[in-house]
Length: 339
Image 1 (spheres, helix red, strand yellow):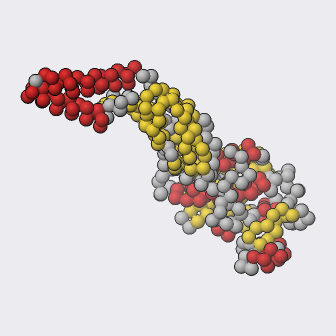
Image 2 (image 1 turned 180 degrees about the horizontal axis):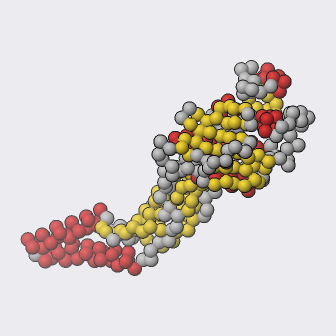
Image 3 (image 1 turned 180 degrees about the vertical axis):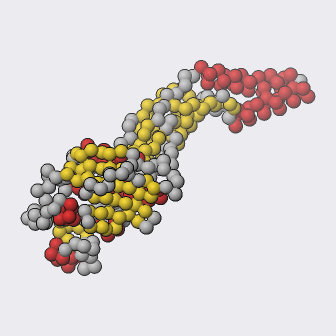
C-alpha cells in the first residue's frame, strides 16, 4: 500500500497545517489538519478491508500473424482500479489499459504478431480508495497461452506431388478447382487464357481437383539453420496445408517431434501448432536445427532453411520456396483452419 500523488498532497497539507498551528495556534490544526488526517485514515482502512481483486479470462483461440482476437476479462473486487494487461512480445494489444470501478469487464483487441506460444497475463490491478489517496497493486488472474501459427502462403505444388512424389502421370483434368497466378514451372496448357486476357498484366492457371489421392500418404521433413527457422516453418506450414487440401494424409517431422499421419481439421491444427512452437527457444546463430539421422531419407518432401533461403524438395525436384509461392504479400492466414 502506498500514497498516490493526491495522498502526498494531503500529507503536505497536514504538514503545512502543523506549521500554521505552531505559529498561530491549535485552531488551524483543528480546521485543516484533522479532517485531512481523518480522510487519509479512512482511505487506508477502506483499502485494507477491501478484498483482493480476481480475474477470469476465456481461452484465446490460436491465430496467424495479423489475426485479431477480442479478449474479455471479468475482474472482481471493489474500489477504483487502473487495470493493465501483461502483453508479451509477439502479441500486440489495443485498449488493454483501462480505469474502472470494480467489479468490471475489460475487453480489448489482441493482434497476433510473431509465430510462437506466448503467455498472456496476469493482470496488473492498481486499486485506489474512493478518494484516490492510497493505492495498492495486485497481480490478478491466471495466465493463458496464445498460439500464433506460422504464416501460410498459397503454393503451387499439387501437380508436382502427383507427378514426382505419388508417381502419377497427372492430375485428372476434369473437375475445376480454382484459379491462381502463374509461377515458373507451371505447364502452359494449364493457362486460363480468358482470365489472363482480362487481367492483361498477369497470367492465371487452372488447378484441377484430384479425387484419386484420398488414400495416399505424404511425409514432410523440415530442418533449418538457426537463423532460418521462421522461414522454414512458414514453408512447411504452406506445404502441409496444400497437401491436406489435396486430400493427402500428412506426417510432419521436425527436430523436436513427429506428428503422425492424419487428415482433417484437427490434424491440420496439430501440424500448425507443432510448427508454431518449433525452435522458438533456439537462439545460437552457429548451430543447425537438424533432424535425427534417417528422418530425411524416406521423406517425400524435404524442406531446408538456410541463410540463402528455403529449399523445397519434392522427390528429385528441388525448388526454392519463392519459386513455388504464388504470393508472399497476402498470406492465407486462417484459410481452411478453424481455430
